[in-house]
Length: 186
DNA sequence: GTAAAGATCCAG
DNA sequence: TGGATCTTTACA
Image 1 (tube, rainbow, N blue to C red):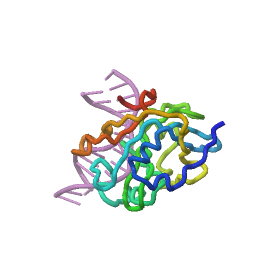
Image 2 (cartoon, rainbow, N blue to C red):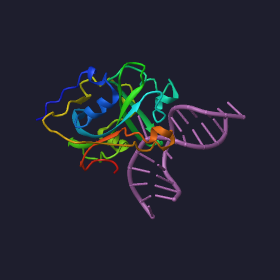
Image 3 (spheres, rainbow, N blue to C red):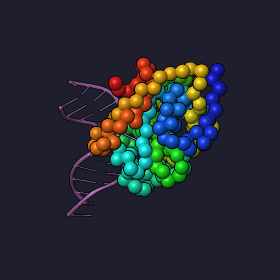
Image 4 (cartoon, rainbow, N blue to C red):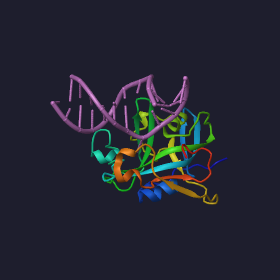
């Protein structure tokens, strides 16, 4: 039986790239009407605030991005392409508008659908717009720390789907667990 | 108001 | 390679 407790808010209140690394191997936990769904985070992308032209927060503070500009440890969820949701966790101090996008999970418990890609991840975990702005310090929706005794290798690559963002498109801000079969793309 | 593009995914 | 599907943002 897994012992699953939320990481403290101070976990998110750190450099975004550091948080992205530490999220790999951690567990996303969502209690859906008593069914506790658990997935291991195997792929993420870092978005570095207003200066990052690939980040939504580069548009400034809007109704949509207000969660990004808020305090760390909250979920930023949005609808993409009219049919899929993407989930981020807000990092660093309030106002920095940094976040980490969760791109892929390895199913651990009560996860039957595919989790390979940010849209599928949200569908499989039962995450939608009403999770936007939700505090990850809650009992039914949170991230639990990874097993420090399960070492792994991290690969850094350019982010997916951000070719429009100039020099930011090439930066190696996508991280995944080397060799994991649930990575969304090579 | 209107239009265009988007941190996706799948079929053909 | 294009279709599904719709919100957000830019601009007139």
